[in-house]
Amino acid sequence: MLKKIRQFLITTLIGGLLVLLPIGLFYLLVKFILDLAATVIRPIANLIKIDGLNNNMLLEGIAFLLIVGFCFFVGLFVRTRSGKQIYLYFEQSILAKLPFYNTIKETVQQLFSSRGKSFSQVVIADVMQTKMTGFVTNEHDNGLYTVFVPTAPNPTNGYIFHLRKDQLEFLDIKAEDAMRTIIGVGTGSEILFKAPSKEPEDSKKAEE
Image 1 (cartoon, rainbow, N blue to C red):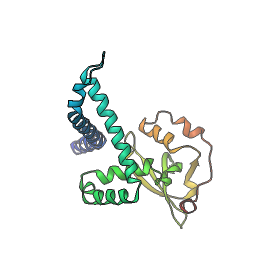
Image 2 (image 1 turned 60 degrees about the vertical axis):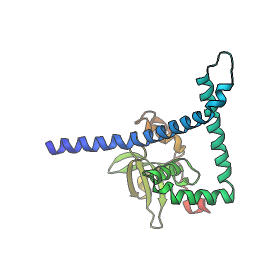
Image 3 (image 1 turned 90 degrees about the horizontal axis):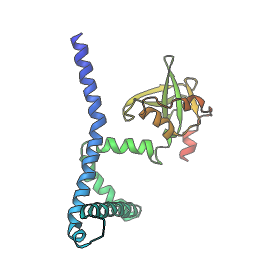
Image 4 (image 1 turned 180 degrees about the horizontal axis):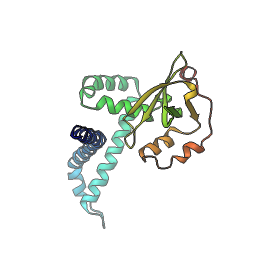
């Protein structure tokens, strides 16, 4: 009994850390960037006087606009051939060595980027007579489908199943809508059962 309690406490603690750690790192990164931008532009903001607007509000507004403009410039730069090469070198030599960088990057790409096309196929998976919300990540020549079933409320964790077609119900629903029910620990899941079924997409043809 004590062993089970200890295992429950440890796994729950680790699960909580896995949810909160990326959020905390993101918050610290944003705060660091805002503070850095505010420090740089503080002398300029002190020279500007606007009625009804104190220096701190003006400073935060300018810092926010500066960061948005910088992000747009970086996005524009990496769309060029030389910018893409420089970014890849910087990523491989520095960013890839940072803790959790690869995990966070791969998760975001799979869930939200255009390269994560396999996640566009939402399914209800029948595993041991239990219905689970899943996403097709791969299709195999032997007729099996690899399905990722996220856990709630943290969709970056989950289970991987290799299932037959007759164990899956392919739904005509957006991946974002299905993911919302997972993050909401099942809230709004009726949209999954109201969604019409559809034929599975051919991932090989989609890639071509």
